[in-house]
Image (cartoon, rainbow, N blue to C red; front, side, top):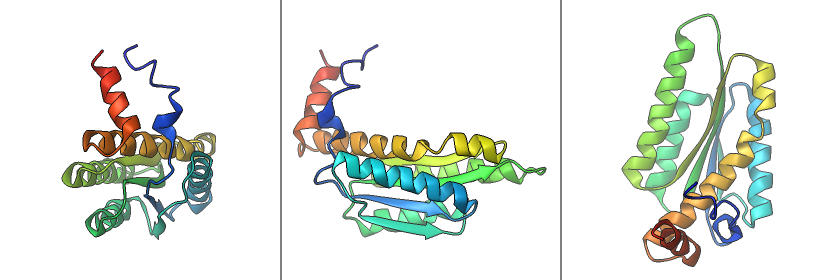
Amino acid sequence: MQNARLRDDPALLDARGLRIALVQARFNIDITDGLARSCVEQLRELGAEPAALLTVPGALEVPQALELLARAGGVDALVALGCVIRGETYHFELVCDTSAAGIQQVALRHGIPVANGVITVENEAQARARLDKGAECARVAVEMARLARGLAGHDAAGARQLGEQHR
């Protein structure tokens, strides 16, 4: 495993000084509140408070809010949180595909890390079992923000990660 040495590097998960904003869909709010709680708790454990926590009606609106945050600037990473539960129509696939593509487009268009925590599940039980995805997204956002800062020459931990990659 090429990155095994990096997996436990605490410097990569040091959120101090990072500005990470969250966008939470309110559809399936019992689930998305759990995702947001998990994400915020993990960010705090890593040393940061969320720079912002915006809520939007549903998963389809998440990319637009991410886009607005990215355009406004002043954030090192973004986190998208939502829950899409399969129904009996094709709408599930449409929502999943469209929101995921929009989230990725924001990251690529603005060169800013975006952790995708819009979970897609068959039922509520599966969703509840995945509430730790919020914490995972916090870790991804921090690590990717450190990497981005390292590439820009502004972060020792991110630069060290680049050095490890080239050994």
